[in-house]
Every structure is written in structure tokens, then in C-alpha cells.
Image (cartoon, rainbow, N blue to C red; front, side, top):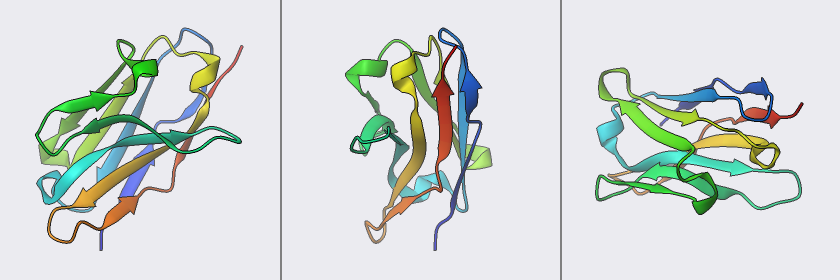
Length: 117
């Protein structure tokens, strides 16, 4: 079983920054992909940023140049640095990982990010 625990959400003004963390219960090298999705009220869950199976990174067009995904292998943690936040970034942000051995998909519990003045 895999557990993903997110932290770092909150309320921030437009133009501000937040850093989200996702701590995994096992080595992040166990995962085929690992990254962040978000879901705004009334909308479908969408990809934000991910470490892909090739080892590179993919970003949603709406966050390119503002968000950066990174990882600390020793801490089994993936981060999402979010800068220049906009009201339309308001959503619940979820950590996602796909296990290499089974291709099972795991989700964190989600963390709320609200961008408002």
C-alpha cells in the first residue's frame, strides 16, 4: 500500500507564492510517474505538473513559467513551487503517483489552495 500526504496549501493573495509538498510512504523511485493534479469547483480534475516516465517534467500550459515541480529523493517528497498565483489557480491540489510494479494509481487526500484578495 502507498500513502501520499500533501501539505502546504492555504490562502494567498494574487501574485503570491505557495509551496506544496507530497511525502510518499516509499521511495519515489518506486513510481512510474509522480506529480500534481488539481480540481476546481465544478470542473474536472486536471494535470498541473508531473515527473514523467521518461524522467522529464510536463506542465499544464496554464502554469508554465509560474509553477515548478521538484523532488527530494532522500525524503521521498515531491514539491510544487507556485509563483505569480492567480485566482484561477484556486482548487484542491492532489498528489498522484503510479506504482511501477503494478501500475496502480494512488492519490493524496488533497490540499486546498485559494487565491483571493
